[in-house]
Image (cartoon, rainbow, N blue to C red; front, side, top):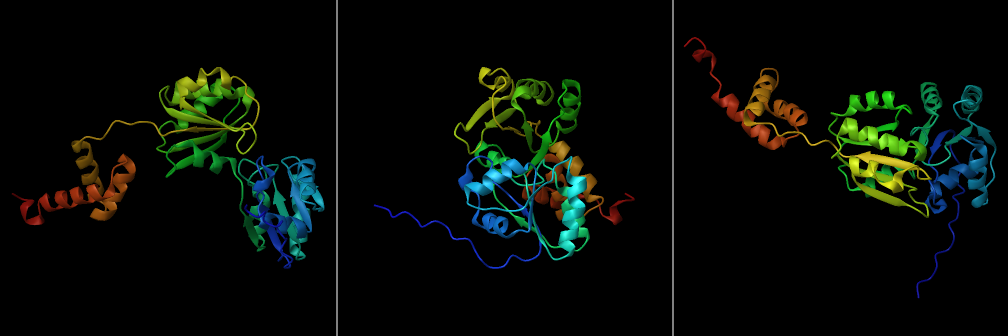
Length: 298
């Protein structure tokens, strides 16, 4: 029978001065990191999006800390105080209600101002609904674009979606349950009804669920009509018509007029989504076949 591991012991090494950007669990409290607990135990002040939420987290691990509210309404008051404490050599921890701070949460002005003032800014990584959703969705992750929350009104949302419809990357959104069905319908209309997508609900929590299908299928799914919980929507890159050989040669010829073959191949690879190695071979062939200066007058 396997022996149970002993409970973790906090590191009692002194915490250096600086601003610590601390990720917290997005649902399952066991996703807290030991390093996050070390920082929260020793910080002079913990800036929290909602002090009540953070107080419960600290209590769950037997910790206490001076808490101060730092959200979009209170930041103008708390930021100068935090910067003053940093200037005195203090240790400030910044947390959001769940996940990694600054990912669609307040705090970037504090990080920017602290760095500009020469203070050390230390990331303490951990849970993130965005990364967790991408890791389990089964969609391409070599390139993705995080777009936060789309506008709540349909007209503005469709305009917003149209601006990113052609982006060659997986699109990632946060969404509320009450708007999910309408949002999926607008995505189907603007991004393409047959575009693959995954709705990630309640990641790391008891009712964690991943709904997979086309945008049209997901928009019509009754289970996604105002579901409860936290939601991440991931949309696969759109399928584009393959470039013809003539398209490739035209693009390479233009690039070769400005760049050396390797750089030309890289530029066209990014633009057309084709393998750079094949494009480099074609670029060398085109360059070799191009008329030299002595042929220009013939």
